[in-house]
Image 1 (cartoon, one colour):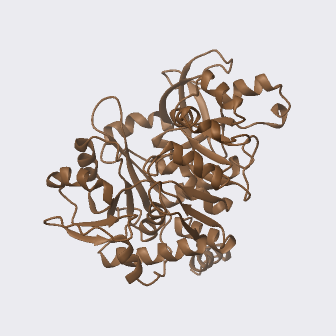
Image 2 (cartoon, helix red, strand yellow):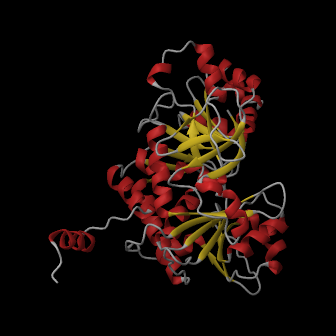
Image 3 (cartoon, helix red, strand yellow):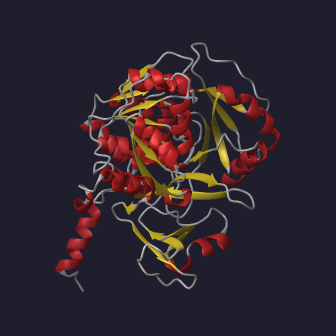
Length: 440
């Protein structure tokens, strides 16, 4: 029996047009649209490096070629590709890894350098990393755990030094990052399935070893789109005119999505390497940074640094997350002219799911009411649904008083805890992700 007109149409549509939501298409769009926009790497102990989006893309493509030569293999929706670990501060190199590794269909494991050596070794083994990219200053840490690593075969050294260190690690193939970039030709990325896993990292709980969470290309592209939309709205109102400095480590929950959203928003980004608060204040001034984001203690360290009074911080916006900002810290920031905006998310949620976004009806609130909202209030960002439920899963009254657990549905939540079906079942009770956080 010949196919119906409808069946024939669907078959033709599937054959000729299937656009995947991948990180490769995300960065390619950003480069095509904002080719001359700037990425600045400004470490405290080396000269600043300035790259255009076009130059970053060229380096991403060369890194991808090098990774393929090193034996990196793609995955698909049913199996993971090669796991590639990274131990690095915020840098242009980390940005390049964010796109080159997943672009091949492999998985980037953003290893937490703040973990104890025991937990770091555990996560590298649990992830099954075969290649590690390591900043040279973390070599002593690496050497301390190397005897315990079971799957790592190759190590790539990254450095800010003009003369790269000559490091030999017995039993491992060792490469230099810039040598790989220079010796490789630009890779011709092919479309991959958008449901291929792109990233993996670990979240520490109060008991037991760290738990692995992972995210697909589709999830990360949608998260970036949601973030780009929400931060263009009041009170953020970020645009192509803004200069952004992430003060969240890039190993921590995708640096809250900034290194993905930047290519949709076309914003200049400044990466600072190792966190040196006096140097960061100087760089904020020199690069005319307009938006920074991080946890409350980072804002505290910037405001109480001995050099802080030298700098005019009026108009700077601070995206706060990790925990609610103390009222005293909020008022100190406001006294310096900084606009502080609360946000919320988890490692399991990629992470951003809510921010203190204004509605049309709240734009003209008196300042004291706005300040209370910016410190504590939250509104779900695009495509996110939140509700507060009792232990039976029933939604509690929306009366601003009844405390219970916050649960969430969104397109970018981790599908599972890596290799932990029991904790996964508990996380996803009733088809909603359970945050474990109490809210009204």
